[in-house]
Image (cartoon, rainbow, N blue to C red; front, side):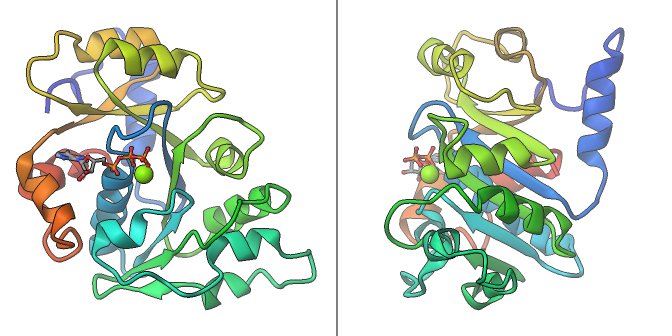
Length: 243
Ligand SMILES: Nc1ncnc2c1ncn2[C@@H]1O[C@H](COP(=O)(O)OP(=O)(O)OP(=O)(O)O)[C@@H](O)[C@H]1O
Ligand SMILES: [Mg+2]
C-alpha cells in the first residue's frame, strides 16, 4: 500500500492527521467523491464492514448515495429511509433513525437512502447524531456537487472526510473544484496510471491514507452480492490501514 502510513519525515501535520485517523473512536466518517463511479460506495461499505468487524458495538452505514444495500447484497429496503427521516419535521424524534435501520449479519446496521430527494434542513442533525452515536458510523455521501446539499452537509460535519478518487487527471480536476476539502484521500488505483500518491496529495492538499487496487475479485464480489459475506483480500488489506 504505497504512501499509506509511511514515515512522516519532515511532515508533522500529515503525521498528526494519520495518527488521528488511526485512533479508534466511534465518530462519523464520510466517504464522498468529486466524480461519479470511482468506487466510493465500495470503499464506504467495505470500510463500514471492517469497522463493524472489530467494534464491540457494531457500526452504521448511512447510505446517502443509494447503492449501499445492493453493494452489500441486501434486499431493497422498503422503509422510508434517510429521505423520509430528513424530510420529517423537527417533531420526529431522533431515535426514529433506529426504526429505519436494516441489520446485517456482520454487525453492520444500514440506514438506507429511501426514495425521493434528500432534504437538507435536518442533515446537520443527522451528522451530529451519527457522530455521537456509540456505534462508529460511515456515511456514503456519493458524488458531492454542492456543500449545502444534504450529502454535502453530512460530509462537511464529519469528523473525517474521505475523498475517494481515481489517480487520474480528470478525477483530480473535479476534486480541485469540489465544494468541500477532504481531510484525507483514498485512491482507487487502476494499473498503468502515471500519477503517484504524491501527485494526488499535492493536487488535493490532503494525505493519501489508503490505496485500493482495482481488482476483478472486488467487482465480482459486488456483482454477486457477496461483499458483506467475505471482503475481498485486496480491499480488506488496503482499508485496514485506513480505519
Ligand atoms: N476496487 C475495485 N475493484 C474493482 N471494481 C470496483 C472497485 N471499486 C468499485 N468497483 C466497481 O466499479 C463500479 C462503481 O463502483 P461504486 O458504485 O462503488 O462507485 P461510486 O463512486 O459509488 O459510483 P456513484 O458515483 O455512481 O455512486 C461498480 O461496478 C463496482 O463493482
Ligand atoms: Mg455510490
